[in-house]
Length: 368
Image 1 (cartoon, one colour):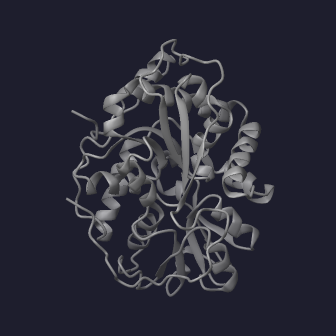
Image 2: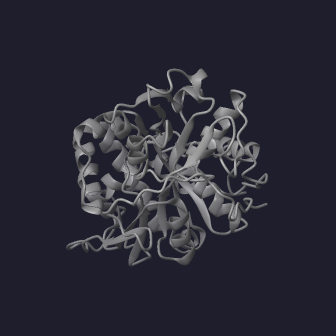
Image 3: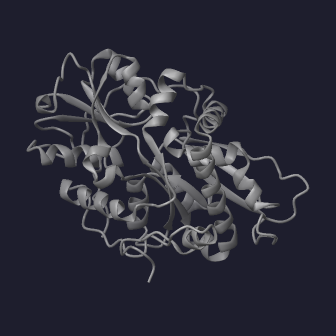
C-alpha cells in the first residue's frame, strides 16, 4: 500500500521569505569530512569494505547523535580509513530522495519520513537500523490567544509539513479530543497550517498562527518570543518515550557493506554515551556543528531548554514507529501499510551485546 497522494490540494501555508544559511535550491548542503590521518583500519582492527560512506542528517538538535559523532570524530574513529562524506538536509523527503539516488548511504531521519520512503518503494529502499532521539516535541501557543487545551477551537496551529511526524501527531491529538479537521487541507474546528520550522517564528511574530506543534529547537525559539508550552508530547506516550529520530540505511549499502554499517552504529553508540557522560560539552559540540552547517549557532536561551527536553537513545522504539503509522492511517493520510521488514536490528543488537548491554526489540517489524 502507498501513501495517498495529496496532489495540489490547497493547504493554508504561511508565506514568509525563507531564512538564509541553507542551500535553497536543493534543500540540502554537503561537506566532506577530513580524510583520516595515518589510519588504515577501523576500530575493530580490520580494514573495512568501503572506501567512503555517505552520511545524511539535519542540522537540528534532535539529530545531535549525528552532529556530535561527526564533530568529535566518533564515527571516524570506528571507520578508520573509510572516509566520511556528509550532507545535511532541511526536510525528510529530500533525504529519502538522496538515499534512493545513492547520494547518501546512511541517514538520521524522522519516523514518518522513514515510513513514507519504505512504503513508496514497496519495501525495497531502506531499513531502520537504530535509534537516535526521543521527545523534544511540544505544543507551544500564544498565551494571549490560547489559555488551555480546551481553548483550541477556531485557532490556527502550525506543523512543519503535511503528513510529517509532528503533523500526524497533532491531527491524532485533535481527533482524540473530538475536534474535526480535514487532514489534507488542514481546515476544520482547528486550522492546521503546514509551515516550515524556519518560518514558524516569523509567522508567530506576525500573528499568522496562534501556536505550533513543533520539534526543538523551534519550540524553545517560540518561548523566547513570549509563547507558552501548553503540552509536551512526552505526556501522551507510555513512559514518555516516542521516536523522534531514527537511523536508516539503504538496503543496497547494508547488503554490500555490513561492516561499515556496524562501524557507524558503534560510533552512534559512542556519541550517545558521550552525550550522557558530558552533556555540556556534547551540547556545545552539537551547536558548533549547527553553526558550521547553517552559519548560525543557537543562543543559550534556546539551546539549553531545547537540549534538556530531548532523550538521546540507541533503541529505535519500533513500537512507536508502528503507532505513528497507525495514527497516519486514522487521520486519512496513509493507506494501511505493510511495515514488516522496515526494521533490521541485527547489527545494532550485535554492537549492544558486545558492549554488555541488552538487545532491543523490533516490535514485529523486523526482517524475517
